[in-house]
Image 1 (cartoon, rainbow, N blue to C red):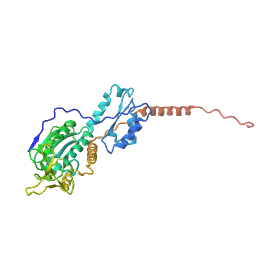
Image 2: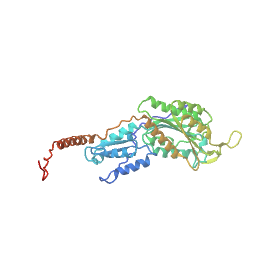
Image 3: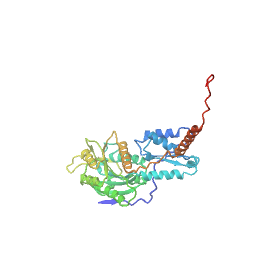
Image 4: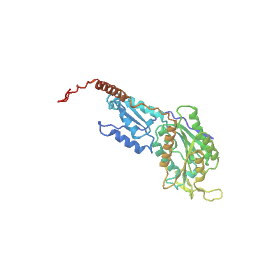
Length: 369
């Protein structure tokens, strides 16, 4: 059974981070932007808007230098002092930013986070679950324009619809724990089906085409579902699944807590033996492989959120480049009239030289008849 949380009432517009570079003429602004683009383009999804009075020369410089693909560089002609378009009326720049945002839409991503009791294991400090929450908040701090939905799961699922209100997303799971879930267990397949349902609803609503992904964070010990079948369904829908396996490969005991949140012992099975939870890496790797995603291992030394960020950034760049229809501007129009006038001038000079008469030849001294 899947339970949906109320749709968020506040959906503020999400814009990419905007960084302005200003300074006196000749101070090296364009060279700085060129260097920044070349340094950051492999790690971030970036674009540039330049300001010139008429010529778009800064945009042309960046295009020629290969700072970014030409589709990611927009030159804005201000018709006056470019500083006016920054300090007093930024509407033309904001319009260019909106155009780039529409041209390069973000991701639709559903984060499926495991809230089963095994996520309380402490082989990842302070626990698998608490570390996952912290790392997800860090991941969202680097997002801009991506719609994020949530599925919390154990034996059942709780869903939060996709939104760009990242603060509300963080509040959804911040104070949630395994004992808040209606049913215990670990139904990874059910969580994946709930995630796909959220994504297919977005498709039904229309709008710009976006790449869709599921980010699954779990120790991988499925007890109540068929996750590989769900992975095959995701593959048919073109949804990639990135899996983050949390925990040690050797196994860890699962603590039990009292009402005050103090550890009172460790989980035992029906025969009185301690239950050990270990990472099911092979299953999570197979889920990712079937959908064209990737598997990442999170342990006590390294959680790997940077790898997830890089993978998502690469996916966005790949998807955006695939759907761009390139339109090229003629940037040498301003040179046509001077070149034409020079040709006419050269023709006139040639004609004038042909009309100049040579002086009559003189008779050599002493020449006779």
